Image (cartoon, rainbow, N blue to C red; front, side):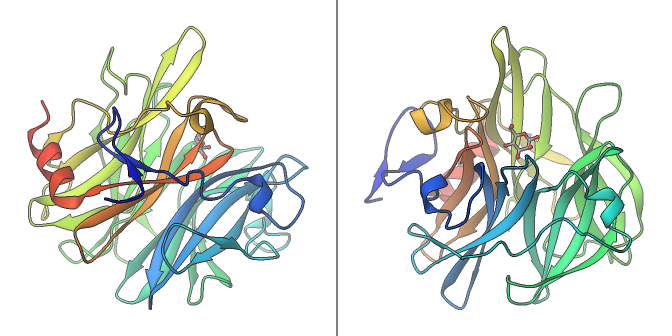
Length: 311
Ligand code: BMA
């Protein structure tokens, strides 16, 4: 694909990376983390986690006609709640939004931060500029909440990532109304010595394919100079997403470029969403070093092939 670099990783980085950096943010802030994309009526919307100079995060919006060149709106679109039920739990910011479309409705699962810790919250939007909060949908100690794009066996489904005995594993939970969640089951755990040996979490809203739900997740490996964040894939059964068809042995993207190595948190690639184009291309949007937003691509069929056969 023209404009993309064929390197050591399975995903091909856009040669124009980073697509959003600090200089592209029209208001004063400290850094830009990652973004969740949606394509609607030919426009790409990217809901971005930005950290302000005060140290906590909120959301900005960027738009694009080609999914590669983005313009960031003049003002943030969603800030921590200052009154009402959410305020107490968003005192230390809101982070890592993930937008999922379900039957023409756009839901955002995000992390609400407070002195009590991280919990998953749910909001809704129609235009990506205005957000209506629906509910806090987990207790503290849980993040990486991501909705599946359709109900399975009559219930909404989400990934989440409770911190149990110090490790972070990926779980799946169910709900009849998007507010009350339960029937939680562990899906997968870190793999000792692998790239995802320390902590894992879902990264993008899962993509429905004939071969199963394709999920891109992040994995952390701890090293003597700190954590390294990479991404990999897992394929899940369409009717029973707690059933793993195959989990990739290799990661599909590792921090290598300077914009992934150097920043507020170095050695991080952290995806929050992807767009599948009509020509079988998938664009994966990710944060680099908690300081840049980047995009990388591959043919969806190739990614599925890899995900089915990587072992
Ligand atoms: C995660 C989230 C991400 C961030 C990553 C690496 O827990 O906070 O936004 O990119 O850590 O620092």
